[in-house]
Figure: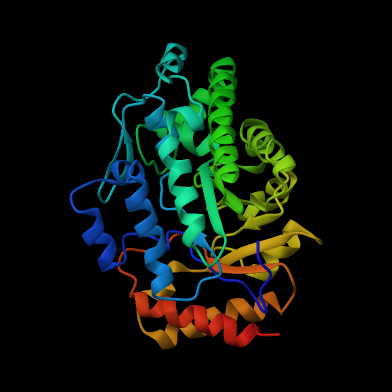
Amino acid sequence: MNQTDGTPVWFMRQAGRYLPEYLEARGSRDVLALSRDPEVVVEITLQPLRRFDADAAILFSDIMVPLAAAGVDVRIEPGVGPVVGDPFRAPDDLSRIGPFDSAEHAPYVSEAIRLLVKELPVPLIGFAGAPFTLASYLIEGGPSRDHRRTKRLMRDEPSFWVRLMDRLSEMALSHLRSQVEAGAAAVQLFDSWAGALDPESYRRHALPWSRRILEGLADLDVPRIHFGVGTGELLPAMREAGAEVVGVDWRVPLDVAWERIGDGGAIQGNLDPTACLGSWEACEREALAVLERAGGRPGHIFNLGHGVLPETPPDNLARLVDLVHERTAR
């Protein structure tokens, strides 16, 4: 990615639902339908950059795109998130995931990236869902508070779990490699639900497949970001997966998280997204606290601790970008 004169800043979900122009472009279509339209993807990806000077663009897409392209009955329900029509509960269900080669089965993603890199003034970040998170959606049927069915299956059906995780890691790797080959300058592996696991379970049931994906990208020589929610106790293990950058949510102070990641590791985060909902004064105060914990050390990417919330005033994000640039200018 391009070098900046200070701390780089971008936001997860910076392209999307908090922008009125996104709502207009979306119309009645859901995210999966939008993701299959390269020209619309280009427009939505560019929208936030017309409002603020972020140091990267994030591809407008969804982690469920590969599964949908492989024939899984998945939809994105407003206010809920991904929902699987017929959840996976038995080994035979694995046969419902069809073949997936990103270039063949999701060519619209690469096409959107090729169009974007011709127009973007900043690097483009691509992404994919990590196997544990995708497996949880498949097994639970949608978002879950306790992931009870997922945990039961991974413990009681180890052979099925390994086969499922193998399949999902192959899909994610194909999806990410295709994005880089089309022009993405960096990639992020989202493990949104990894925080549901304790460290031992994470190392046994999730880490090997995340490592497989990240190692499978090493020859492409692009920065790799590994992010999870509620993963404060998992950060040392996540660092072992091999990414250059580990993303952290807002539940762990940035300096504490950096200690857990260890020397030489870069860190992304970690302003609470709710800090951007109200007054600029409150947002500024909490953002400065994050920068203070970073202490001006190299290797910090300023970001939210998760995605931009739908109620976020766009002006707060614009001012936040300017604040980070002004306070960290070298």
